[in-house]
Amino acid sequence: MKVETYLFGQIDVAPEKVISFPKGLVGFESNRRFTLAHEEGKDGPDSFTLQSLDDPTLAFQIIDPAALGFNYELVLSNEESALLQAPAPTDVAVMLVLFKQEEGKPSVTPNLRAPLVINLKARIGLQKVMEVLRPNITLSNLASAV
Image (cartoon, rainbow, N blue to C red; front, side, top):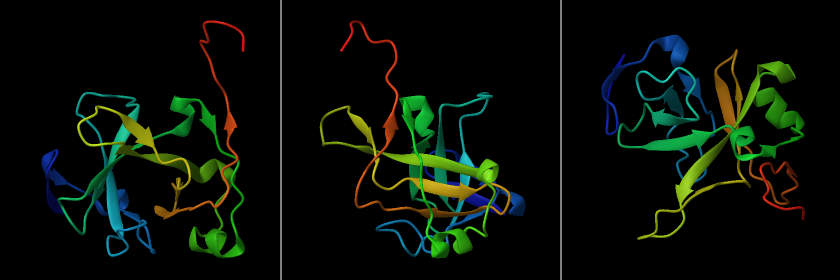
């Protein structure tokens, strides 16, 4: 299917590249079909664009939390596991949505409390909103000991 996007112009999305979010994303519940896009020529991009197929003007920048030094240890509820079709841990990707902190400032922040959990084999995902954030954080390249 051909989709006209704001960032990439017209893109061709094969059916096997569609990721379904049955409950949508927080604040965008009516958008349930997405695809991942990235700049041409980038073999291993640091971030991706999660492009809505339901609203061509809607796209989110997402990033692997490991690229930012975060390691999530998530526990899925029975309902979440069923929604994701009971994936094996190796079939799951966890991604963070990036957003602009304040208008006028070039600051971009990851949404740590609501990561995306995607079953890569089944191409189905959910946004896991957490009441309490308990990430295992790894910091590297510190100039001095803390």
